[in-house]
Image 1 (spheres, rainbow, N blue to C red):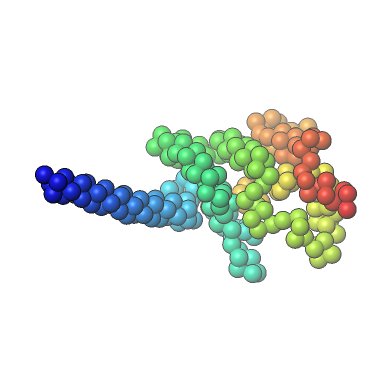
Image 2: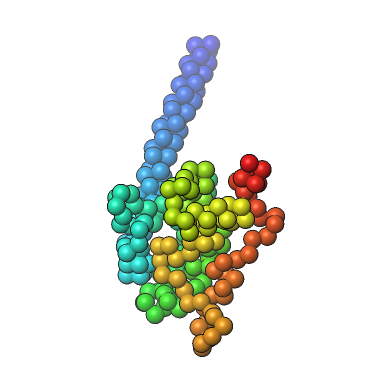
Length: 218
């Protein structure tokens, strides 16, 4: 009887360790597959695999300094539009499921449809970048690394003024990689475009960033 009990307990223990090992291995395989899928969808080739992107914004991007420059360093679609940190990246990927829906619906599947939506799409991205203090821009560009003596007089003045006012990259650099939407002006016919305030929004006192405070004290 005792022998049977020991044998049963032993089998249960063996099954428990074996099951735990199986779960551990399955977890590694799942994480590897998940991470591979995330990285596969985080490439320029994937971003332009649909004609909506390849025939519109990608063609605009190809003629900018982010795509072609003397150093050969390129900022591709995910560099600017997908966070590098895991948490924000997952949130952005979930949000991108809405883009898949509109791909199926054909919301912007012609140049005419795309241009009609250009302002709305641009506003969404401007707002996202404003909320994150132009996080993706600052993966490569940062005030702390600026050598103002090496910049042109106009650029140097604009960057220092922006720093002191607490501005972020997207406040001044809209249209750096893609064609800007129409902008409303005081003259001419209505364009149903963005207002000047949307292109260069005023900075509120509470929006001043720590970098600006540091520079003011220094």
